[in-house]
Image (cartoon, rainbow, N blue to C red; front, side):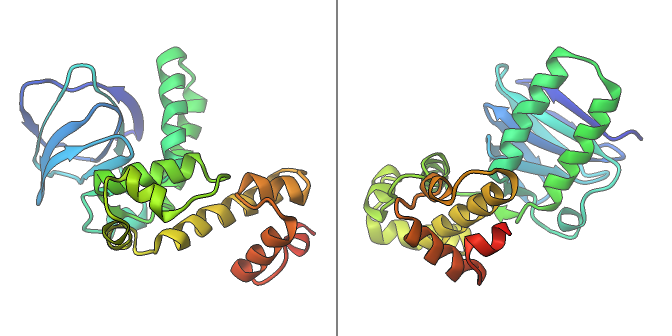
Length: 235
């Protein structure tokens, strides 16, 4: 069996089958209604559903919905060992799916397709396999990711999620295993580390790109998080 990435739509009529390989379905637009294993529900953009070898599954989707489908001989260890059927994917993989769609819909290039699959597999292996996220928390997370350079306060995030601050903080931690501000800090520090590694931007610019207007505040937070200063990391 050949490892394969493809773009698909699904029938509006319930369809049930199984196959002799693993399959991952990652919505690009619209949702898929799927029953597989103990899961029976909707899978939306920002999520992935895992159908393992010979698992019977039933699904329907709107005609306009589109999905990246990965037929895989072997799953990455983190997914193969997990009982998680549906999990939230991170921003890096979400953005890579857009590239996959663009490439597969516009050009045939077997070498590039093989390399795309390898990169897809590597990104999958880094997924934390967080459970399917509540839509209200997912909305707040999306806002955080898109506005990581801005001042992010609990009150505004809770309003976006249509929850009280207390409800929001409690549900956020249940869904992500982190407090809101620890999650924000994690994203900021990962982005700062990437910018320090892959760009020659001055520290002030990097600090501003991850939400710190004062270089001293950025340096202090980076040092607390990683155990050494951004200057030392850069060198």
